[in-house]
Image (cartoon, rainbow, N blue to C red):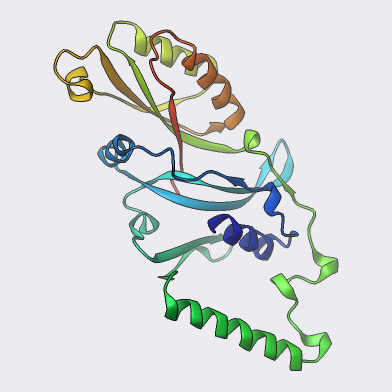
Length: 244
């Protein structure tokens, strides 16, 4: 649902054809309760976001089209959208950032949206052809060929949670891999072993927040970290959006 919505919004915003097949879609099935808890301790909330942006990569313009859970600072308005409420945040070069908030589910909001669509169709049908607003707001000859970027080219920051052996040198190995990959660390949180596995536990959680980096670099670094004998479980990676 979110992927269809953001795909339509990307077409309206950037005048590109609808390209749902190029959208990256990741749901919430892999989220764990401890990640929600750790995110809150670090000042974030986890939200499922649909994101589309016009960006420049290696001197060439491209578009992002992705849906996935994201850490969002809890002071942002969009981090406090709950229940059946939806919000759309848009950033324009002249207007800056604006937020549109309201009910996104339920019989009356759905009926209202359907009636609004029918009214728009009727208005277009009775309007002179030269004065009709085209579908998706762009004339066919004004559509853009903006390329939708693969996830490997996306630049964002990350939350990483590693279940590791509670022994000396583990953190140094992990941070060394990130440093070699050119990935800058924003914050590190290491839990006491007793908090994670109970009294006498030999395992602990290490949580790392990074600064922005290209996803392909992060994928390579994650593969190296996962191969360490001291990393005892699959690494959890959640993308982070500051929305500043």
